[in-house]
Amino acid sequence: MASSLTKTDSNLLKNHTSDPDRIRVTKTSLRFAEEQRLLNSKSHASKTSAKNQVSQKSLNKFCNRVHQMTPEELDEQLKRRKLSTSGELDILRCRLKHHYKLELTFGCENPSTMIEQPFQYIAVLDFEATCEENHDDNYKNEIIEFPIVLIDVKQQIIIDKFQSYCRPTLKPVLSTFCTQLTGIKQHQVDNAPTFVEVLHNVEKWLNERNLLSTSNGHKLAFSTDGPWDFTKFLQVQCRLSSIVYPQWAEEWIDIRKEFSRFYSVRRGGIEKMLHRLGLTFDGRPHSGIDDSINIARITLELLKDGCVLSFNDGIRTSGPKATTMADKKNEEEDSIMLKD
Image (cartoon, rainbow, N blue to C red; front, side, top):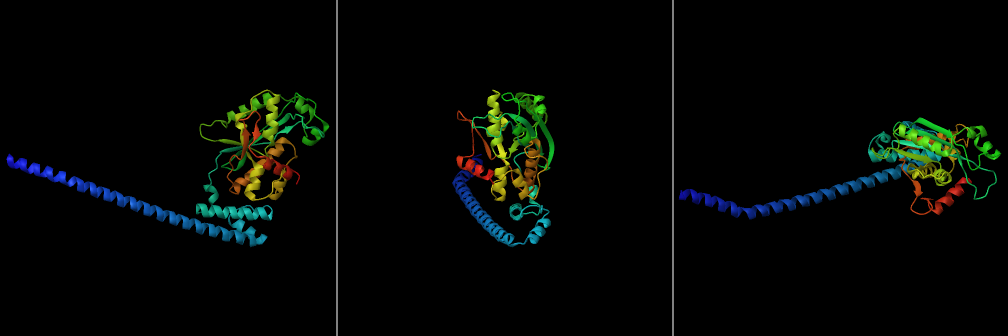
């Protein structure tokens, strides 16, 4: 019994005295593991940095080559990558450079399939409103056409349309100038519902397609040609109709702005953008639905060329008077572009 106790005590003592050693070994191992982690991290950062430098050098080298290519060589390179060969020379060069950058980024020959767009659908909108040839700054434009052209972003196709005329109440009789400009006839607005009714029908149409639901993240974005449809026409109309400005219209994609940024060209209207892409206007200019279809065509070309379309403009509602997010400099620039 005493011998057993002595052996047990001896084992306990041995285990007890080995604990500090075990702690020291553990601490040493942890320090070694941390040092290895830091070394590996630095090595990975160094490799990533080197890879980025190589990629940037490759991109710069390729861009220089693109600028020296003849139109025939550009066509050959675009066809090889199954890209559109339609458009002005600057657009073709930009298209090829963007695609090559995506090739470097994703490391594959078909990088467009790897792009993650923030929205599933884009609803293109272009209002038509009452107008007169010579009017002062106090003139109130009333919306008389509410069109929507719906794009499936993944499929890159137009999948649906909505269009309705609106009956103006402030000035129910259209001017001759307005009729000639928009092609909208007096009887079309006389027989149309009021704006409030049309807005209700629009939101019903959107909800039937589950487009206003945010349960699955950002599903829908509206897009326009410039900021004016929302910042002027819709805002003014909501005030005239004494209704709350719709939440879904607080942010949008300004296609004119995005087109200028992506292709590195000066801002221009619908027909100018189409011309740059080698396309012609389909339909009647200043028809709301036709304008929307053509803006949608431009939007589809941006998507095909790898442009990530996200919100780039919106309404600031914090102050007593809602204003566009664009600063005065951008507004002045847009004003200059309109004269081109």
